[in-house]
Each structure stands twice: as C-alpha cells, then as structure tokens.
Length: 430
Image 1 (cartoon, one colour):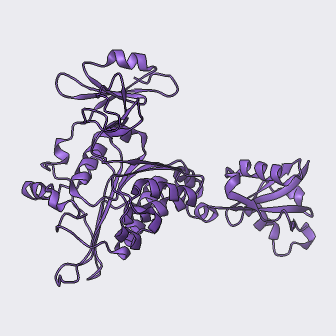
Image 2: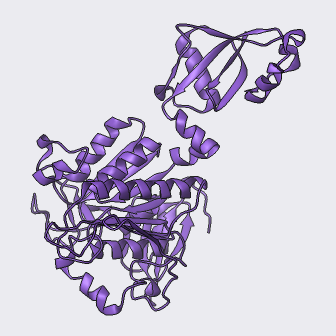
C-alpha cells in the first residue's frame, strides 16, 4: 500500500492509498474514486511520473503547506516533508467540471427527446452531446437532400436520401461514444406500430401492413412502438422543427405531462426582401404558468399558422424562408446554454427571446400566460398511477386502451385520461 496524490487539475485533488502499480488497474481505481468514465480518461503521469513535495515546517516560509491543504483533500500536518507520486486525470469533460462542479452529474444523467434533425437539430445535438448529456432520442420524418449539406455539420454527400434522424444519431454516437443516441424515423404527431410478421413500422391509421399486407390487429399481430406515452421517458423535450403545427402538438404534450419544453427557431431574410430581417426566437415552457406559443396570438392567427402552407416556416410568418447557417449556430448556442442552466441550476432560464440579427435588436419578452389562449388554456392533464405489474395495470384499464412498453393509457367515461405506469422496481406508488 502506498500513498499518492491524484485528481483533476484546477478542480479536485485527493491524497489516496493504492496497492497497485499496474497502469490499467490504477486508472480504474482513480476513475472510480472521482466518478469518471475510464474510457474518457487518461492519466498524464504514468509514463513520466511527477512528484509533489510537501515542505517541512522549517522550510515553508511562503506557507505553501496551507495552499496545498486547501487544494488537496486528505492532506494532514503529518504529511510535511513527504514526497508523493502525482497522477493527473486528463478527463474528456474536465473543463465542464470547472463550470458546473458536482452539478455536472445532472448533465451526464440527462435524457432528452429532440424533434427535428435538420441544420438546427445538427447544431443542437452537437452542443448537447459535447456538453456531456447522457442520452438523446432524435425524431424526424425527412430524408437528407443536397441543399442540406451546406448547413448541416454531420451530413455528407453519401447520406443523400438517407433519414436525417438516423444519420444524425449515428454521427453523434461516433462523436461521443459514451452517449446513448437513439432515433425514430417518423412524424412526432403520429402514432406508429410494428408488424410482428415482417417487422415493418408504419402509422397507426393504416389498415394493412404496407410491406406484407397483413391486416392490422394491435392485440394480435402488431405492437405499438411510438406514441405520446413515449414522452414520459424523457427529462425534457427540445423542438428544432420548422412548422407551427408540430410546435403546437409538442406544447400540448409537454403541458399535459409537466415536461420542460425548449423551443427554438429561425427565420431567414430573402435577398429580394428589403423589409424583413434575420430572426432567432427562443421560447421555453418550464411550468404551467409560462406563456406558450399561442399566448401572443389571436385565434385567427393560430388558425392561419396551422395552414399547411406555413409548414416550412419556423416562426410562422411567411411561406418559405431561407435556412441561414449563422442563425442556426446562434439559435442552438443560446438554447443549449438555456438547457444546461436549467438542468444544473447554475443560471437563469429565458422563457422568451427574440433576436433580429439584421438590426441587432435583442428583445427578452416578459409576457405572461394568456388564460384564454386557444392552445394552453384547454390542456387536460391525465392522472398518472403507478402499479407493480402489467397484469394489474391491464385489469384497471377500462374499455379500449393504449399500451406501449411499461405504460397503459385509457379514457374515462367523462373523457379524462388515465395513464398507468408499471414501476421498474416493482413497488406500487399509488
């Protein structure tokens, strides 16, 4: 057994006792002590060991020992005059630890659903993955086209005609191998099932499987693979979409389930339009009291923006806007910082921000919730119950029910919705 000093420079150092000289074993011991992933950590001094010399009392005119005791956990007066081997843990997210401290663990445990895998989704996914989040599921129904390549950092020419969600998730997985990057190819507003005969995934409103022609029967030969119940798997939802209808759907679901919702969009200026500017808009809902996408709009405006011809516009203003690469970067940087502030509690979070980069005007809205809003004033939150087994959940369900993974959902006679969740630990909570 020998005593060493090890840790992350400028963050945390400890005096430790170890009983090995094997580099791999020592690395695993130190990573376990500091809560680091071994695959993301190297030890700088294994090849060229350094030493820290603790000065004795009579040679410590500069009170160096006092400085050491502040920086090195476990150092004692009896350590004066000793030489310690010094091992520096070179961790992938060492700088993030300096920013967030112990709160960085919350980022590592974060599981998010991101809807939209275009240029804005590329930037957002990159920022959050490199910031250390633990898991991300990406949803998008579109395929990659040639114009996407000039704005999307992860798309290549060989990816043309491939699903955006799949390519982005795979590239994020390569960028940060420790993240769990999943994807679903489809429209977030629809529900999907898988044919148990051929494995094809298709929308729930189909009568037969589009591949093998088997008649649809959810109880016998098809299983539900994606529905609104999936939202409950995530800590927060991120919208990087370019249409009003999807934003409205995500807003409603997040308010129903009390899931924090982070929405960001851009609107680019056309070369032949002398009036409009380049816009970035951030809108977040962290509590039921925060204003939603419809709180500033009249009923007529909401009906107008629901029109499919506005589907490609992220801010619901014009029929088709250019995708400005710089706006994407600005928008994703601002919103990813808001998300990290929220998760770690290290900063305040905006509910609404509007930026015109053409005129360099920045507006932080102090809008309050509109109690007569066409969208958020009509939210009916489901009652969520917890049981210890799926058998019990099924006996509690009334009439037709929706089942996916460990949850069942059904409607009461009064129209209200009940969600029964089977607890992972097998204990009933209610």
